[in-house]
Image (cartoon, rainbow, N blue to C red):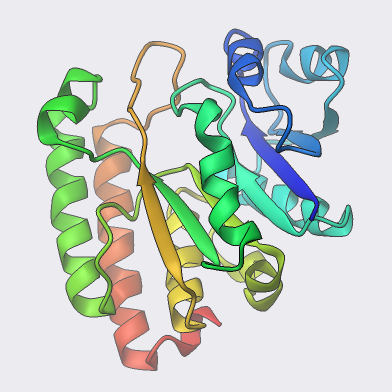
Length: 237
């Protein structure tokens, strides 16, 4: 099976090589980096490192970047797609554990949960307001969606080709709430979802949204949960 790693990138020149160095090379068949109109040398460095590179002529947002990532991966014949942020926030050495359950056809979606313990998440640099917001939203999502996940908001995730092909992800948001919308669509499609625990790393070069954007993100998720309940999930499929 062909495993494609996709990297939605924005100003990741300082962390890209470290992310690639930890990646298990025997599992990944191709790496696609989509540069969302960075102002640094991310795209040039990625080409130098031998990655498949696509550059957006203007910034399309985090969700818009993922749309290009998944479209290209499917077009290139991927059977499994794993998203790895090139900002070194997530542990790319765990990519094999993300894709193996999908290769074995045990699950359709894998998530890398940053919430192993409260102490570890906060010690890793996760702001307290993000931790509390994450816990609240995950509790509500589990209750309303009938799941038992430890986190819905991780950016470390893997999908089977079959699940991605079922999802109308191009109609989802171009903003950060895309992450939740694609999971809502997967759940509405009856996806088998599992997760592994991954350490969290927050530092200056790691991407992170501020308090205001986090609030907008949280209210957008609550709005979408309402749409999910009203339409019984059909809005996302």
